[in-house]
Length: 217
Ligand code: SF4
Image 1: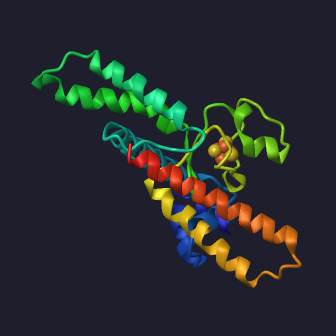
Image 2: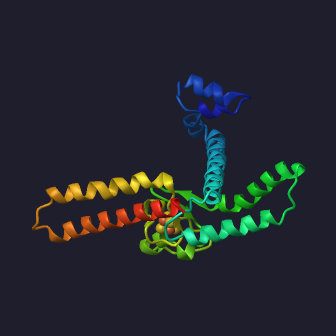
Image 3: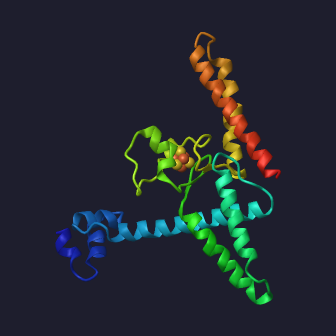
């Protein structure tokens, strides 16, 4: 019945109402028309994500210009990329008529970097080279040109594509502060576990210190 109704003009919505389904995607499934609203929804999500990544990249750029540098293993590469962009912008003749053009030029130069950005809980991943992705190497998956980062397995303190910014500080700080509390309840007999917790705490504190140092310029 879903198919019969859904294939009439405006029928998909009619079928949704008639079948009392909450989501159009469910009706699409019944009507053997997957991909309609779902595809549109996914396209909208991807576009919002692109906009968000561009905003984050622009914010990182403005931080760089203000002397608030990124930290983390990927910071030298990101700083070098921003310095390159800075030099390109400086080569453009300035003038009142150039204001809009300069802003657009900046966006154009930052967009390729924004496209490579993946947002982790405690870091940004500038996914330039799948072969350098520590998460993929640790997962032991086949790495190819279309590989995507496994952000859930991110080792941001060691991967050369990871950077840390001010907004990540609280995450690392909470790790640095909670690990010592855990040590107070871990029995001394669990030596390996205590060593791992202590290493986590030390690593988190190192990242916090590096963020503070880089932000201070
Ligand atoms: S380990 Fe993290 S930063 Fe490195 S590629 Fe994977 S997700 Fe990106």
